[in-house]
Length: 265
Image 1 (cartoon, rainbow, N blue to C red):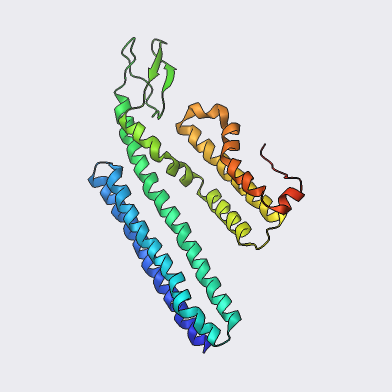
Image 2 (tube, helix red, strand yellow):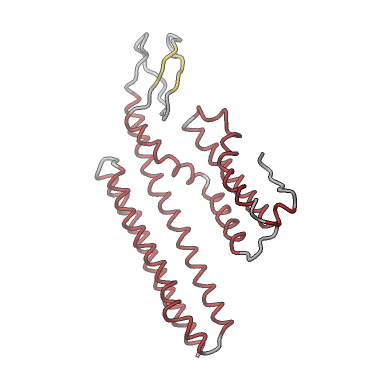
């Protein structure tokens, strides 16, 4: 009987994953087409993605709903408790995979949108001229106000970001996350491992801490590439990003008993 239950449950999970993967493929293609059609307008793209994301979360919720409403009791009626635990573990794994994929696809969609905005911003800034000699300025895209010397006359020129550059700032974090995606995955897994443990060990908490530090350090370095004015305070920014994380660790007895051995101070 439990073999039949396993087969039906695994078949259900496979169908959910198939529908979810198709939805994500449609989301990537549809948002890319919408971005091109609107000339880089990110508002319709954002609205479209939110609708697709809600559908993805709906598919994810079907897993828990089906388990709680129908499947779990059938395993328990058969007194197949170990098989029930294994079946739910497979479901939890898929729930986590869906969560990760939603983050990946969202990051991809808006990183692509940002690249489109940066191309437009470069065109806007290409028209900038030195206020003293009228020569062309550097072609780099600036997302914040900067001062630089004209290459021709040496005058100090203030460059203000254009409309597209200002829009890009609001979603630039997607580009930075994309660049740090492997570290984001490590952070997610370390977070999950620590949270899933009934009583997390010091080793699990320190692995989580390391993953947080690695991710945010890389994220801040990526940010500095487009926002060079942030370079001077990377250490301070890192401490700020980790403040709430460390506050959470202080609630773990194993952490405080070890003397709160935080690496970032």
